[in-house]
Length: 450
Ligand code: GLY
Ligand code: MN
Ligand code: MN
Image 1 (cartoon, rainbow, N blue to C red):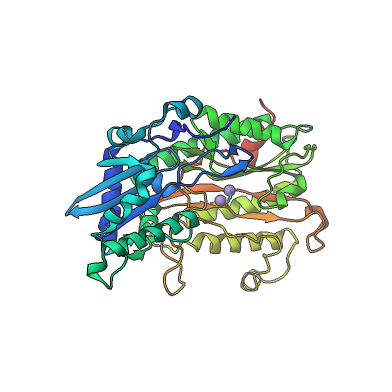
Image 2: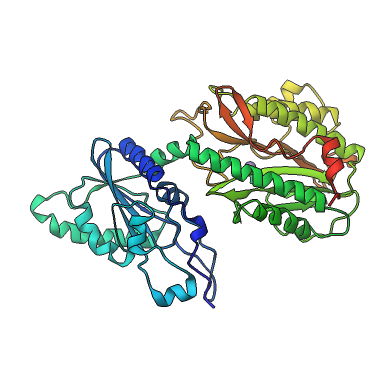
């Protein structure tokens, strides 16, 4: 059995929306031919493929769900462009196995392409398509097979253009920075998807809290989490769920998820549901038996205080790093209170004395990709300012390894992270995932209450 193909659940047939996005991008890029493939299919083993997920940029501009698809688009005048989709043609035999395809006609009818052709015709049509363009917008280095075929097409193009030497092929420019800037500032449709992803993500975290009790394995809590994601309209996760109990909470991207949980453990769950192509990214940490020990509660309060301060720092015009600066100061103050560090807080911050216990950043852009596109620094390596419509995470944590001699013995084996998704607006930060409980008493009331 070949598992592949018919992934119409990712179809977003909204031609007006996608035409508007393409026009904005092409206006930002200027004249030239944009060539954008979707994500390539990936083989898992034998004849089994990984589930296909459309490439984020491609899906943003087309809403087209199927693998083996390429967008070609160019401006045709002020406020106008032409979009051509290359797609898998209808194939009654393959569709029996893989499910229905939009086909060439469907790419035009449902997805609003101006024209469509079978994907097999891409390479012999490309020389003609690119003949009249001095610039070609394509990111090299992502798909080497695609790049190689592009070079072959240029050889044909050189023949066609031999009377116009010395220009054998168009100048290749990277469209991704312009695309990333567009994606970073969410449009209303993206925001609706972000809110839906946040709602499903919250539902999952609440379900995981309710399902957790001593004696079950981490993957059982994961099953409750992800079942709730699915029930709330999420066909897949935005990234592999981290369900890390006890000492595993100190492994930042833990993914084994198979330890049996014990009374007295904390469980750290970092997971996000994808809806409409966008993902949530939330972390909650809670006691497996429903009651924080005093050491766990002391650490938790420090992290929560830091996170709330970090969220308040996410304001239009502030550097995106302000949340990190604020969190690091709060965490350092807390580390002194907890007896893990000694000395003057400002000096400890300057020396980065927190690093053994807080070794990751506080924020990243969030959107279609969990670590989403978008620049962080300007050309002088200075942090960019937050803009209205950007979404970022705020995710401080403290991690005391079970065998870490630098940590007070009462804290060893405790790992806490608290993460929410924050929309930056002119009226201040909006926490999209605020409905996931994080106050100690709220969390304690939920755990184990299935
Ligand atoms: N879930 C990955 C992260 O928080 O960055
Ligand atoms: Mn994150
Ligand atoms: Mn996360």
